[in-house]
Length: 325
Image 1 (tube, rainbow, N blue to C red):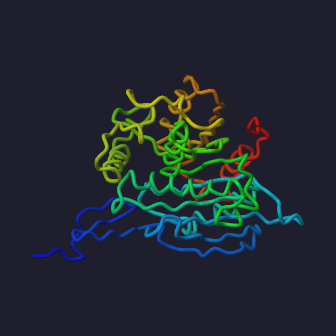
Image 2 (spheres, rainbow, N blue to C red):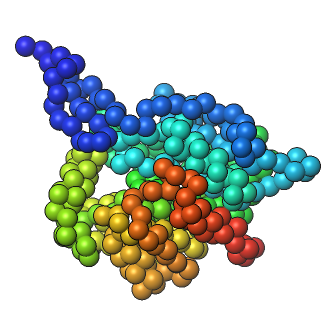
Image 3 (spheres, rainbow, N blue to C red):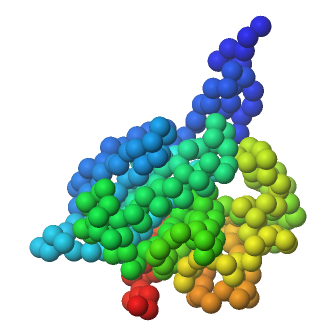
């Protein structure tokens, strides 16, 4: 008998249900907020589709409210949303609202990237989509790309990558790829900001072993999004033995932001420690939000800890440390 849509194969709560006929039901992040001008911040946004032909990949561009200078340029932030590689898009209200607030606070022009998601599109597809979108973005660096907002308002001397959770994982892996001299990246990434980054590994570290149920839940995710990958693949465990050295990271500055009650916290700290001891020649800093859970800031933009996290990001994106030319 053929499988029907209501025959459940498995569930990964609270993200998805997968049915035996291959249908995937996403349980969160399915709402869609259209682009436009945000009445609270004055930030305007627009979608650009067909970034990668014949795929669902698109970007949403956010521009802060302009002064009288219509040719004003801003630091460029390329942002990658989280959701365990399974859920959310730049159109999800939780990310659209966050990017409006972040762009207003930081005075950056932001490009929020949507990549194809697992399980229909397992890794490395999300990495490949993100890299292709990044290449499309930097095609504007000479002022002659296909999107006028980036041609006129993006300062390609100040390029930053940032993302939360799975998006932070993507940012790290893109920065590692950009550090390869053969990658063809013809500009410098000034900095990357990893917010509650999704890193993991086979052997528990720090407090991970204190909550076996929570650890088991995280253990299930990586085989779901990357079935062909071992538990300590450098994509998920950037400090794994035998993997590429963090000294190859292709940026000048790194900010790691973690939350005290997040099960992923110790991986963020380990990343910071290993990077600090490596031969990488940049500057790295870390901040921990006391008493907070994973990606708490997305759920209450007005709480003081969320505001503090945003202020730190804004300061990071607006450093006067320009590349040497």
